[in-house]
Image (tube, rainbow, N blue to C red; front, side, top):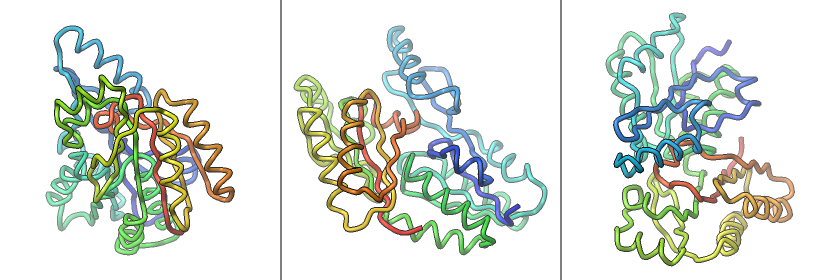
Length: 285
């Protein structure tokens, strides 16, 4: 057993290899659709969110899902649930996209003096957040303390890069400050918007019109890095293009680990369906 507990939230992509070999506790997001709340867990994935949202819209419900953190008592239960006295490092989805980090900090402050709890803002999402959690868990299992784990995670954050192309421009009115008129016109023209994560925020960069252009742009984005250690391809309803992109990247970077993953509902609340993107880790483990 490691001497530090590692916590994260349900936005993190945690592969079976990680969960099978490391102790990581996951706090689920809540997603509000209309007047109902859904817990982000293995039984509530992107397709479930989309079906729920579609049903709510047909009955005059909410136009967009809302990402929420669980109540403060949930965090207190997690922090105090293991009474062995071990300190805690919690690594959460970007604070600019999720209220998890702020809620976790509030709970940690309430227990200050009784528990050692370090709450870290990943400034990342999904596959990128999962990589940071993996680093934290590996360091904890290697005997590292709270400060050393925080140093490792914070040192890796600037080496994570993410970009997405999405056809769901309506979602970007809230998440990337895309104007309503731009969204409507772009949707009518079949435009796909390119989003970059900058300091934990989603920022609109450019637009393309075909899915072939999306694949080309993403390949160019990754190929520009001098060194790449990990690549995650995130997609929804872009299977053909995701396959093509993976094949091209394996040809360009034959020694790099490339994983295809379906992004979680907590990210879908911001970028919507019909999306293809990459998360790149430029660094060393």
